[in-house]
Length: 186
Image 1: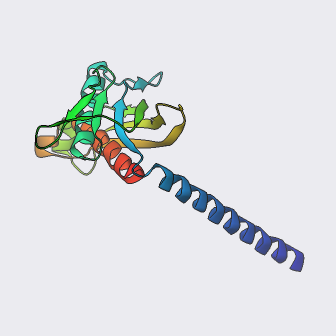
Image 2: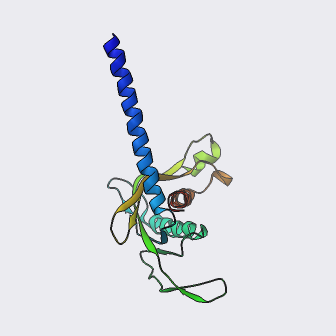
Image 3: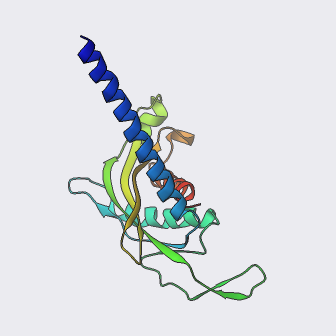
């Protein structure tokens, strides 16, 4: 019995040590990317096979992600893959400055989509008819190709004025992407 208790304690100590080591490494890598990246390019997301996400909603979602990232006012330049990058930006006084700094490429895959029902949200409430979209996103250094950070994010419409429009789920996902970018890189 004493051997079992000693093994258990040893296992707990080992797990704690491993957790502290991983946390320290994660904190170190987080410090290495904070403030390093000034530009972000949003690529068109893929849709996982079998997920019935409307293709017209994909372009809207990308535009919403770009808009949310711009509203952070943290990146010098935010572009989508179908836009061309400009070589200059304008400062508040109208002067042009060269766009410099490291760039992140944001890519993702829609992994889940539940269409939901506006009528159910309006008539039943209590989470009935929820629309939900989930995406696995990756933030990639454009020079090295290294994945800096990846995470599953989601957007939901649970309720809203007259049941809420299902397209709000893509706006919710865009807001989550912006929160993740701000937290990880600034």
